[in-house]
Length: 138
Image 1 (cartoon, rainbow, N blue to C red):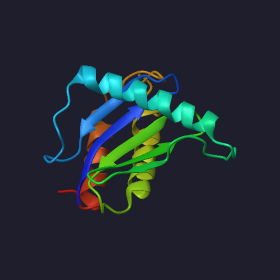
Image 2 (spheres, rainbow, N blue to C red):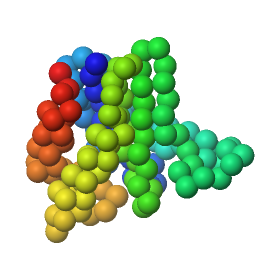
Image 3 (cartoon, one colour):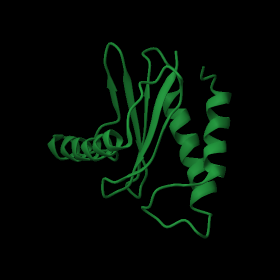
C-alpha cells in the first residue's frame, strides 16, 4: 500500500503545498491542484455546516472508496493537511500529524515564510521525505 499525494490548504481555501508521494500517484497539473484544493476546502466547510451534531472537528476527516482513501487533518488555525492513499494504507493520521509537526518546525519557524502563502522550503520537503521513508512508502 502506498501514500499517493499530499496537499495543504490554507484557511481561505488556497493551495499552499502539493506533491506526489509515490511514483504510483497519478500525474496532476498545477491548475488541477489549485481546483482540487479549493473544491476540497468548500466541501469540507459544507460538511461541517450540514452536520447535525457539532463536534470539535467538523468537516471531512476521511473518505474511503474502492480505489482511494482521502484523509484530512485540520489544525486549530484552519489549515488542512490532506493525504490520498491506496486502500489498506495504515497510519495515515499519524503521517498527517507528523507532517504538521514538520510544517511547524520548518515553515513556521522560517523568518522569511509568510502565513497563508505557498510553502517553498527545502527543509520542509526533506522532512516530508524522511517521514514518508519512516512510514515505508514505496
